[in-house]
Length: 206
Image 1: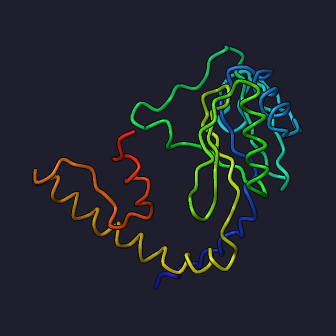
Image 2: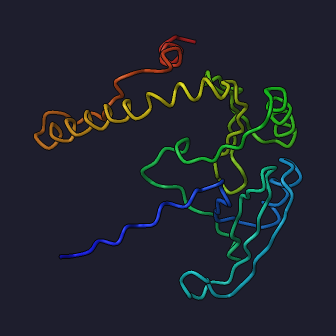
């Protein structure tokens, strides 16, 4: 008889430690995140070899600290090259969002960014939060978010999340079969439109 050793429980993940991107230039990136956004430069690691892979690739790895102790970090590889965008993904998809406490702080940051010549989209109303969007010097899309919904409202919304995703997954399986059979070439649309006013605006002549 085979004895199955039980797996240990998953470690409680407390918070994001850091999210790392490639930077074209360390000083350009520092100016944006520290001088404009107000995130202090907090830690630097420099090496010729990558600890996780052992490969030779000289780098400067530098970290900016958020209020909760987490970091956004960058690698300057010393070649003045920025990361290339993903060829099959729209620019608005991949992004990182930072939370601020109030809509007023959101609007104040928009003013600071625009004063530095940075184009800002928004304030955009997502119902449960409001956001502004902009790009850093490395072409990374950033979002600043001011939460509107309280903890109870978010908890109530969480109660339907699994059912809604399961419905999407079931419809996607059907869509895959129909695509394989040549019955459709269109992308799959969600079963529910949570933002009908956005579609209405898109179809309203200017």
